[in-house]
Image 1 (cartoon, rainbow over the protein chains, first blue to last red):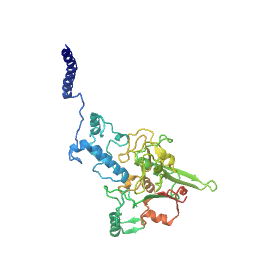
Image 2 (cartoon, rainbow over the protein chains, first blue to last red):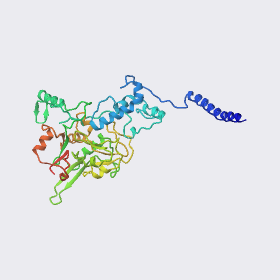
Image 3 (spheres, rainbow over the protein chains, first blue to last red):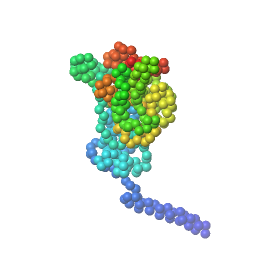
Image 4 (cartoon, rainbow over the protein chains, first blue to last red):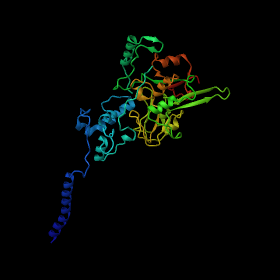
Length: 134
Length: 247
């Protein structure tokens, strides 16, 4: 009798769990439920680092470069945010933001909210003239 | 922040060579070939340079605000719609001596002190002085407490009250941070001059001069050696980068 009760209890917990897993597996494969990031490369060419490195570590490069630029005036293009934008801005919207924007679509997928765009311009712009030093 | 420890800097050598080869002066201040003074992009700024400005108040015109509009345009500050709260990196000040009615007009902005009070009071280290003497705010660390605005004797800092979307790519700025004149650091790093100086020259007033205070051969150093120049509130002993002539 006691063994039967244990078997019933196990059954009660396992059946919904396995049913849920089957449900989740079915829906993960279904396209459209989780909007996949729209990574459209409109300017084909070599990125500054290999793709897998960029996917994992782009934020580290940007953070390192930002401190060098702000504090030491290093303005090399290698890991500059403006260079990322110049290459990856959508030709339709002219921006890396928006639903299919290179930055935003992936950040939405990964559920991260970096605040770069509170200050930085997400659209590429022409460099200003520098003037001539006397 | 790292200094060039070599005896002769590469830049100094290049500048001297350029001066010797192509810098034949046609007339004072006009050269056949401009001396290339831009630092390489990947090199940090050096404390061998100290950027400064000299403002000749005898040439500055009352009513002219070309420097202010050039600054607003260059740095994406936009039109002044709310004078009490809009950011103001440079402003024109009119002074009149009550006894003699002698009137003066001058631009006032961050004086890029060697001993900046804004840096002393900043609780996060966001307000800092670059090796070449330019005083800046690192917006990544600024928490918007506005202590620096209180500490500045020149009223040179502004707080950004509203969100912005029309920033210039080279001048990021946004709500919740304090900001001020950067001496157009993005132009200076590429070998240029601040936008206000350029606008003043374009208007034909030539009241503003920008250059390296550490280089005894620079135009600005020669000028401050020749004429009497004043630091505003020199009694505070802040050792200003901006000097005024004729006040």
